[in-house]
Length: 632
Image 1 (cartoon, rainbow, N blue to C red):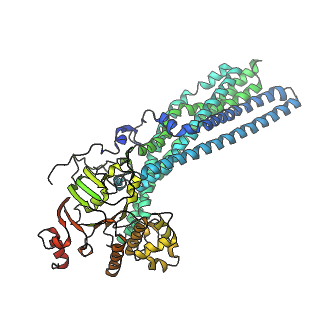
Image 2: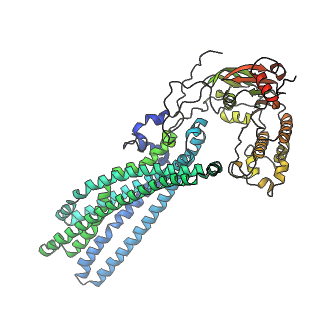
Image 3: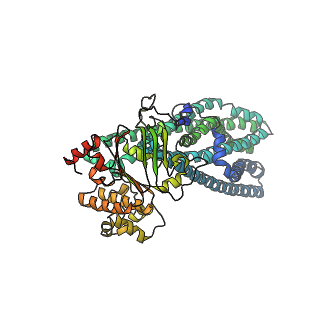
């Protein structure tokens, strides 16, 4: 019993996120190396054909956008100045045709952008959802739900924008800038260089503005996640009830207002910084146009090779060159800002699954229900293991050299069909023992076996099918009673639903409801009483028809009359099934085949009620405390 635990290796979920260091949002400006390659390989590659079409549409739209200034310049030189009405008409019609072509290319570009973007959102959300729901319970005990939902909504959309928005914008700017410069240089290379000479006045401020926007974007994401998390916690039934019971309306409103105000302040800063960018861009553009008319006008007067039409063309193209050129000077920062969302998504995907199915896992077929604990030691994961600091919004707990064991060398066998009761003081490790059977956690050392198989060697699906659980506080989804029951077995008939509800002594309650089995139970089942939820959970477990049943205070919310009825129903329903039962009221487990008395993580007594009640030890003390005397 006093042997030291053989601490298992590999129990370090989440180390990938720890290794990333500065890659975590808000902790530095650097992004992980290879991020773009990973985005391409894991998400963008399946859409490469449409991405090529998207880029071609950008090429067409951006290239066509350069033609109108050229056509208008020709219209002046070859139409207006030559008084050629036919040429004016043809060039005007050509400008209209170019506009139609540009509009068509723009529409195609937008459709492809929307298609690729929405499919990427779908892929990201599906993969995130699948990954998160397979995380161990330890992950959910430390993660803020609102922050996690924010990642799956805001950051997924931001990641999609990185592919179809930022990269598409960069491509469009490159094409438009290249086309504009080619035309400008072909007309007058000296004037082109003069126009470009004013850009250094703008490039440095633009870079600083872009870096500031990147920081504000990261900060805004974090603040929005915190605000969403507060709403999620306070607007569920349990949170709302707690606020009402303590009358903390003013404090809650104040704290929410503080978070909301910080989000608003960030929004104002982003708007102001962004407007500074565009104001500066507009000033540089106006300066460039003024240079074109000043110098170009003198050239048109003094040089026969530079015409009034060239001035019009140059004036139209200079803004088309400034806009993309100024944007490209900040392209790296914009791309990094957009990639922050992908990094935040990957941050979650990189949290490892410590409870994973082995490649050679065995299918548990026709389970008999034998449960064996062999020298089981268990310690809950250390603070931070299996979690993500950026989803917690709490100060990290002090590191522990080694978490204290909750179970210390526990060994017992529950034969098929037996009822084994676990009793003992709170915190002794009883619920932990139940959680190890369906692999909500894995043992630190030793083994938990079902039908002779180590549960770590079984497929997760077959193990889950063999084990049914009724928790102390059963969870019901915000759905109908019928749907909540069929979560255990979607193909169950209405007659089967009624049968299990009769066995759980809940059918009459359901039948008396206005909508019967179609009654919506509310979030977490709050429209039902505690006892009704408990019996509905028992019915759901019976519908699953497992070989092993785990009952954690399954009758704790029932009055005496219903407790007797449900105990009678369970006694019949659990025949042929192995049952592990936790009960603080010892009257409910006196008929158990085996009673295990758990104290400080160890089994200190074991045997049937008749033996334990007369023996010296914790069980007799607990029984006398509850009933005042010992009965045979």
